[in-house]
Image (cartoon, rainbow, N blue to C red):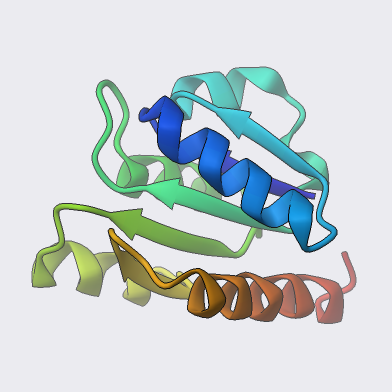
Length: 123
């Protein structure tokens, strides 16, 4: 299962279609809070996460998951890239930090890498 958290509905829908087209089950959330409140993220093999969102941002969600000992591989997507955020995300264990607009084939490769890592860790 791939979980997508992005406040932009068109991005969520587009990513959902993209990953369904290559065989993944997908669930989409419009905010970090919606994702956390769903309680349905335990089956996520990868989290595609927007960096900047209203309310809790992507880095805060990453910190929260780590603090709660959830080991979900994260691929960040952002239209607002900066080196400080990139460094924070990668230091905390993100698989990748991708700028929007993104290359679909490259994103699929990164998500496959994340899912493989999740499976190799016994999940």
